Length: 351
Image (cartoon, rainbow, N blue to C red; front, side, top):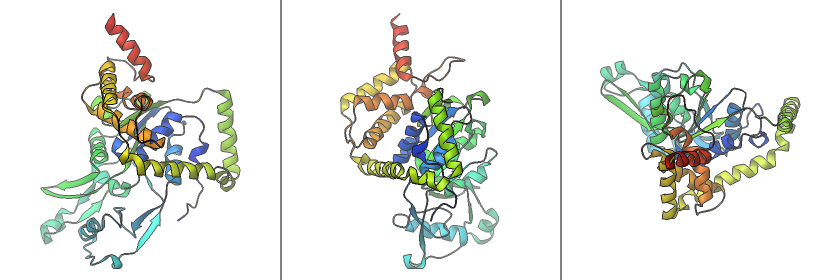
């Protein structure tokens, strides 16, 4: 199924390399628990998310399935979900039509309630007939796709908690009056925010796997390139997309290869000590930072086509996974360069 409207190519986005890398790594490995992009408006955040989804291979789904389940692996779950949502009895795979479609980007509105996000249970039906009936929420629609949350810092803290729990566990549970229903909810979580509009609580900030600070490009040449490419896309969207088709296809193949070899990637024990020293040196609380740095380093290695993690992978992973986890003093900004921050902190401690 083709998009009716061409989408600006991911490969044509100028600069913002950290942001693009953070998005790609979370597509390769959704267990990284998402990426938070902090920065001013007009820096291609939403453009990058939609563009990346557009180049990914189509996925197979059951026709008219609100849970976006995988026919090969989740047929038993599909039977239960269809009964719970529609009261339909599915007897065999041949009863169900399967279709292919693009990976979806589900956008979460700022004013979204918990029921809209999680879904609801029909208690009247449950009490009257003793059967569960569910109205699926946005987390069902986001399964096997991308959940994009603009201005995540303006959402209710409880809703953010629910999103982060589902992103970490890959499951969404709808509960009410002692009745519960669970369904798969594995998605790539992308949150964006403008720090000038308020910060996330540290406890929520820490739950995002990666955090990237971005700002408008300062290079005159690159800003001119941005204008030229945008004008070219607006004048002839199909032609512009065709110009970047080869690069888009190459990136898609690289992501698929990385997903395939990721389970084989290994890190020597000495590198684990390096990760722990990094986290201790910058003052990271808890152990989530260590684990995410290791996962990110392995994902970086897979993206580079390797099955061995290097020290350079760990340094890059630390830049993406640690800045928002640093124990900060009041009014202290999240650092952009974790390596420089580490060196500065170690120097202060020696003094």
